[in-house]
Image 1 (cartoon, helix red, strand yellow):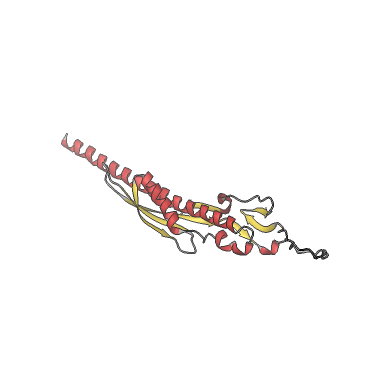
Image 2 (cartoon, rainbow, N blue to C red; image 1 turned 45 degrees about the vertical axis):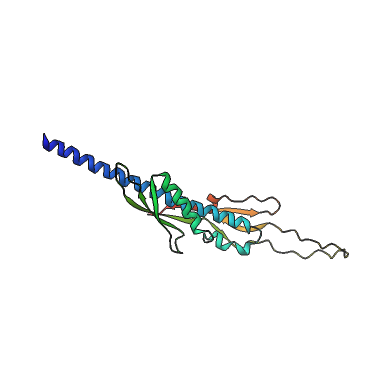
Length: 188
């Protein structure tokens, strides 16, 4: 009878450890994804700020123009929602935009566990400046007036996101969403 009780206790202890480890990994996965999604939203907002100047698009469309600490703040928030504390949040290399986070579960009856996860931000868009419409002959010069004439910007062409071509019309913009611009996923 004592042997059976010992085996039952051992299975219970192993089961509790597995639950604790799974909870820590879930918290790490959620935190890593939260950081990457926050960065993705920052990239889209920054891109919208320079939407009429395609010369400034590169850093945003390539996934490089975001505030690291803001994204890590989102990671800490999601870790705490999963009963864990964020102990590390580091950007991945420039070749892989994203974050590596480490969390520690905050104990309780099942103890604590540490886990790490990586989430990457993959650009889905390219921009080819050569796709801009050719400039036509300038219209004849009107008689001089006191008011300077403003040139109306034409549509911006050349943006392609995951096989879909976008035309950015300054008068009535139809713009890609953050999910059109970037994919966020856990890395292997």
